[in-house]
Length: 267
Image 1 (cartoon, rainbow, N blue to C red):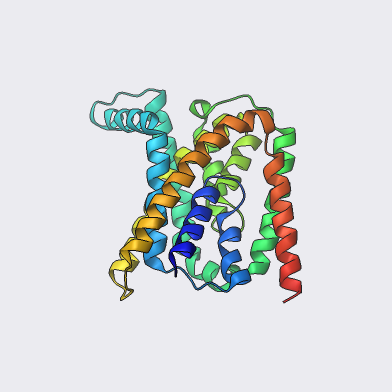
Image 2 (cartoon, one colour):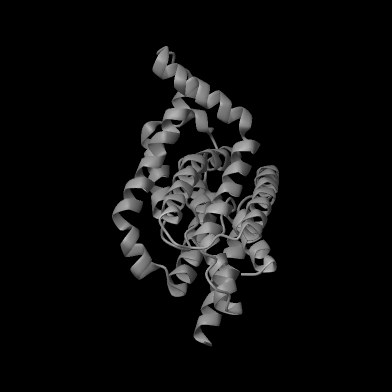
């Protein structure tokens, strides 16, 4: 890996982690088209740290409020809308954890292919388009019920299938339930905090038991680039979706999926 490759891969990870366009679909492109080698566990941990820091810092006020309310609900038995949302975020994380533990090997063996990614990129792009066109846009994340939260949580679990997009799946599910676009995005981003933290911790434990060499220069580029790109991605996505909706991302997904199919059929 070169510094240029580490910069490009971290930029891709930071931009695609929070947009509904599938990070896995983009991360296969450098290796498939340019022949780049796998970035390795250490780099995966670095970009997870960068994207996690971005979403935590961007939503720092909400994170502090939710964490304080959650602790208050345990220690002082005080319950309010913030503590409810905190518990719902925890609930939404459970399906992905269970699905990941049970299906990790199956996904790695059978679903992590360019053909699967191209297919899911198109299919879930069309689903996002349909939901965005038919959604009622009536509620925010604080009005969510535990049943609605589990539904979005299972959508997050389904996003473990490469090409689906975690943010795309959770935003699609929330829109289907009647969330506004902004509320669906905020709920998706807040839900990403525990799941990215858990994924990063898992990769970190694997790294600790591996013999992989660590290049601090590449890792620094990965952390900084993924942090900056993810932070600005969250900011502008939240600013723009109320005006432009999901259609531009749907069009992009369709173009990407068709492009992947065209590339695969000419290899």
